[in-house]
Image 1 (cartoon, one colour):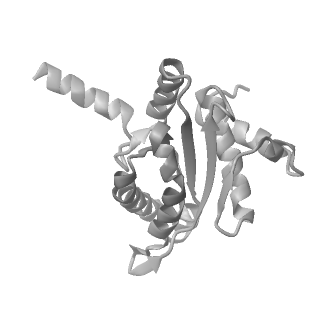
Image 2: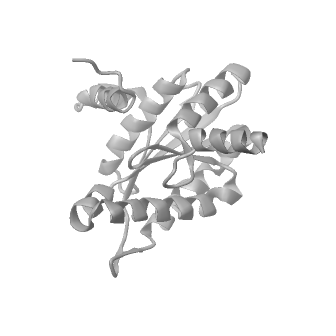
Length: 200
């Protein structure tokens, strides 16, 4: 009974209560462990930013927004299970897919599958809502060597994805030097706020 309770507590500490996905803490720990134990193995992150959740919150209330997040997370988990990518809820409206080694070959299949899943209407108070998403992808070790920087690269790519037809951008260092150079600062500020790094 004690062991079962300990396992339950560990699960709660490492998973998001709303979506059931592994949480940001779990993501960072997994990335750090992967880079330390398997430094030669490629890791690919795809950050999925659910762009309309805030609109749902404003129009239907936060409970409806939670429902949309939960439904989208469940659908993504089911759709991506055959591709063997791990899913994490990184922040309020961000879900991260992580693939390693041989799974990287499935990236071309992953992106259209994600976009197709999110186009399936989610019923909210009798109104079918089609979700929009912006996807940013990045590689370890090409783009960054630690978890925080790798996630930052994915966030920057996702911010640029709104300008693309398929709403997906692969990170490159040129994005940091693009006219919207403050993207780097905005991404780092967002991370700082979420992780409680700011002090007055």
